[in-house]
Amino acid sequence: MAEDAVLGFLEKNEEILDSGKFSEEKGISHDEMVNAIKSLNGFGFVIAQDIKRERWVLTEEGKIYATAGSPEVQLFLAITPEGITQEELQKKLDPAIFKVGWPQAMKNKWVEKGKSNVSRKVQNVDDTVKDLLMQIQNGEAVDPKDIDGLKRRKLIAQQSWKGYSVRKGPKYAPKRIKEATDLTRENLHSGDWKNLKEYNFSAKGQPVEGKEYNFSAKGQPVEGGHLHPLLKVRRQVQMIFLQMGFEEMPTNNYVESSFWNFDALFQPQQHPARDSHDTFFLKEPSTTRELPEDYVELVKKVHESGGYGSRGYGYDWKRDEANKNLLRTHTTAVSSRMLYKLAQNKPFAPKKYYSIDRVFRNEAVDRTHLAEFHQIEGLVCDRGLSLGDLIGVLHDFFARLGMSKLRFKPAYNPYTEPSMEIFSYHEGFKKWVEVGNSGMFRPEMLLPMGLPEDVRVIAWGLSLERPTMILYGIDNIRELFGHKVDLGLIKKNPICRLGLN
Image (cartoon, rainbow, N blue to C red; front, side, top):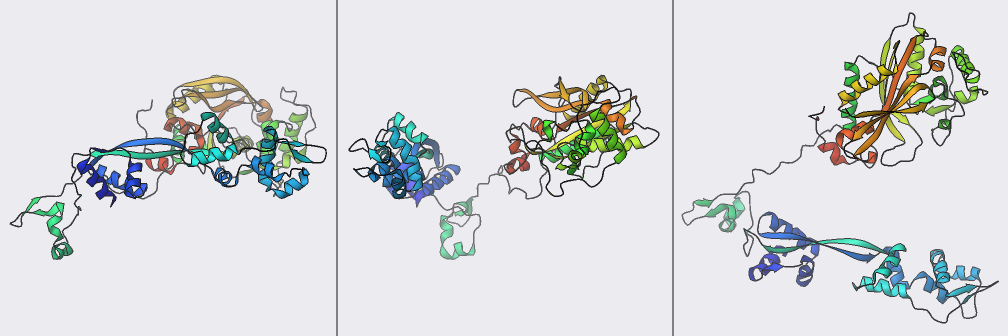
């Protein structure tokens, strides 16, 4: 019906200027008209041009006020000429109406509050808000200042309308002949075969026109599993570590004790990171069951009074604080366990370890931060290592990942000295973005474990999400990981990336 209306109108007229008005004139819903125009446009019967209009419509709250009146007027009318107590006034009105109407009526100086009563300051008022809402509902023009006022009160909202202007296309015909893909038995019995475009027969019964095929049309998308960009980059990072001779650390403990997460890393117990605003502590089980007691005593001593050339922090170290269970805030807790285990093996043998797994921090979520994310951790434990070795390993690691533009900035970490933040240039943001942290583990952390005095450990950590964002040109971490992830991104991201330096 809609297609016939469009084609019939264009037979005698040059153009349909507005599909919205045209659908009203023909008594056809605009959605049906739009579908018909899109179909005709796709087959070349017509040429459709977009028309976009913005208009103001009433919100649900605005519709209520357009019918019942604004809250301030309802409140004003509820006040008797002789006055009324505020308690009685509140009883006469819906709580939401009183909450909105009271400040508006006071602002308009319509009412005044005495010692005991609320009374009117004017005899009559005009419900300007209701009148404006009615004008907008009827499609009438309203002053921009009034629009701003209604918008601030959230009584109106902007709505986008999309329609089309339509004119004849290269394949225009007054009537669209039904296109069929097959000549069926029913077509032959009913005689419809004479009108089928694809089977246009001559008087001798020979076909003179074949079906027009679209050889560039895409087939149905293949349904199946798709690898998430995070998994691809994780695998890529894993292969880089393995190529560089690293061994993977076990990271199956999401729940960790404060001892391994903080104390073993020479992080003081009064450090802000131990606050519940930064760390998720467990209620059940709230404490760990066992710790290596000899090592605990050495860690306690270095915290309280120092050692190994350090003065310590000079406070009373509490075992109860170290026993608390938490969701690990970094995979460095795994590194502390592995280094302690390595120190127990005699004689000492150099090691290179890595891990990639989830960590948890009680952070505010924004475009670059999540409360749950993946951390990549790498460390090298050997004799005579220096800061130069760390910088060289980082350049080698990130270059293999495709991020050759690096910068380093001095930083502070309780368990590394010196420490450096790592920055990489983000082509999407057009600025330098922090991608990780690094440093050399302090002697106060390593020597209580039992490692030889000449052994040094260089280490670095970074999130898996940020390098993935840089490599895939994503500027909001919530579009990559979490409930707002775009499934289209998962299906369409490339199998591999080429041309990385």
